[in-house]
Length: 469
Image (tube, rainbow, N blue to C red; front, side, top):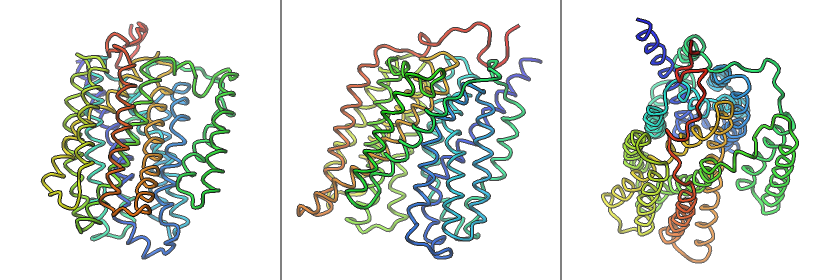
């Protein structure tokens, strides 16, 4: 009877975490198809890009802070705080009456979203034993991929039939249910220090450096790019110095000596740079070269995400049997094959060929992120899992942002050199292929790290978050 009750509780918490993950994933893409309608009503076309940029900036910047706070105060508190901020931001977004107020509200929403992904994986790690953990990481990866492609379609449907505010209001009923489930059903695994030391200097310097580094590629003017990038790198160096002196560092530098984290973060950074750059430019190629409509271009990304969802689920099941390296290396080779095929596309490429190339790419990418997240989670003691997971997410997010900017520079430079757009696009995928090659080298250096062998053994608690008697 008690065991059945515990299973129901674990199932409830898993459902609540999935709801939050779905919301944070949807809100990265649902706005894209609704923005023309929003801009038409609110005006402020010059601020268009900031509706996307501010969400990304606040979410990325807050990730490592939430991760450390989860280690200090427990994942339950941080997830509830993050989800609450996300819902407040969603309400304010739906009520916005100007582009400026919408941007501010999206910033609040992003502050909350920064907790939902990394802390969700911490909670899964506490709910399930090691042999089941990979399976659920794969499931979460599949859900993230699916909701990413559903976002634009759902946004388009909602703005066609309802006021645009409902693309944000739809978060409220789902999010409130998830909030109460996590608050009432989940119990933290450990006891936490009632008076923890918080590294405010580290948090401030890291946040400022991330903001400046992410802003530098999107600013107009070479002087601004160099100035902001240089200031961001300087603050990053200052942050590293602070961490060597801090009593309770926001990001313990010793973690980067662990192969699953140090090399794993390099894999995540370069894979994300390649992948997000490709995803940004494939629709542009289809519209610019093939003359497809925006909706048709969006549909062509569906095979990529569907195949990624499949391989994410399969890869998650293999984590209990194989080393992380044994999953990453074949995945990266398949993904590299997909990028090589994509580097050959031109105006004569058929839709069938393009779809098949994206299926190959998706089959390669699907298992990579769940494997990296599980490797980081399993490589450290429970008190460092928040930092490990949030750092993994941070490197992926920064890599994706920089990748999009770098690929844009490549396309622009090649077109200035006299190339047509379809030829300039070849440089995007060749560069992506090189980045995947760097990821492949880093994955080899991971060693033979395995899920079960590397799991820290702490006998005072069970994996379901219930203290042992």
